[in-house]
Amino acid sequence: MKNNYTLLLTGATGMIGGSLVRRILEHEAPCQMILPVRDIGKAEKLYEDLQDSDYQRLQFVEMQMGTKAILELARKKQVKSMVYLSSMEVYGRMKDTDGLISEDQLGNIDLKEPRSCYPLGKRMAEHYCYIYCYEHKIPVKIARLAQTFGKGVRLADSRVYMQFAHAVHESRDIVLKTRGMSMGNYCALDDAVEGILTILHKGKNGEAYNVVNESNTMRIGEMAKLVAEKVAKGRIGVRVEGEDAVKNGYAPDTDLRLSGRKLRELGWEPKKGLEDMYREVLEAIKEVI
Image (cartoon, rainbow, N blue to C red):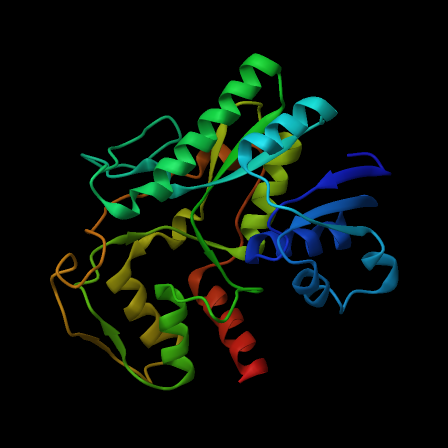
């Protein structure tokens, strides 16, 4: 992109949005950033460490905007490029998943499951993107993110990878409440940011791209073992104290394994493995605890 352009970025107080803001300030061509947020005070505090020259490039606007509203704004302003951040959860439950799943494959989402509102909402938002791309020629692309963590992760995150990281920090065994058979697809936070920017600059309009490091794909139990043996260097173990995932309130096991080939063909290459990602998280924990 050329100098002196304006970029609108939602989610600037979140993990991925905040990492994108800082990455753009450090490495992209000079630009002004409009950041819609729910709480300007919170946003200003998150970025108070910036130098004055960088902080002045940020314009916080207190508002709530849905995907359709953003697309309508993109139509009116005739944007040069746009990326919608979706999720691997749009794939739902796949059958016969012996191979890697590409972007043109979708599975079933159970309408009777309360949490299905999230993947269904992501599917609807993607559909809006397709509508605006093909009817209004909006240059929008879709990034389907794998589970993302590493440098910049929020320490209050309660997802499984943070539970494992806290177990290492506190030198206690990892306790699994399931058999750990669900497949996890992961990508380092800074690799994901580079993937999103690659899609923004090089992606094809109307197309979706998986943002995933295939070498980080493994079952939860396998990841627990890796963390205990490699990250904690054998100081902790792994115990299973529950085997029925559904009975214990967890989602059913999934074998979903995403393909990252389509994004790699644009020139993106993820660099960090799970061990590096966990070490970054542990460094962040040590800084505040």
